[in-house]
Image 1: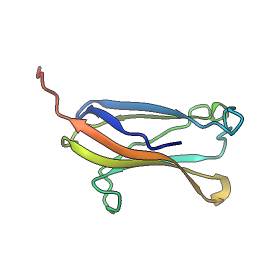
Image 2: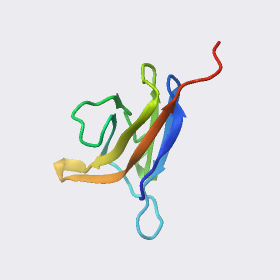
Image 3: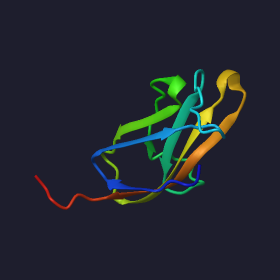
Image 4: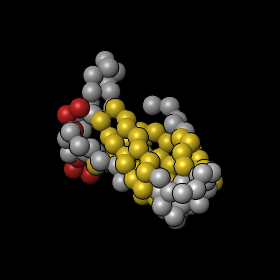
Length: 109
């Protein structure tokens, strides 16, 4: 999967979903896999700004979902990635990553 960049608003719920497909276009069964995704200020930063807490609700359909509140995030451009840990500690697969731009809300309540 190529890099994926997002543009969203700070302080709102950020949602995204990704479907893992094999070379024939069929969904990859993700049973036993664990997804991890984090936002950092730079690609090499050791500090996690936001854990995107991805889930794999129905492993057989190959879909990974992110649904996380961005409360407390300052407007700016950050870096993120999504990886899958293979079952039985067999390794890690990079799925996608890129930049995520958080904007301030203009209209206030």
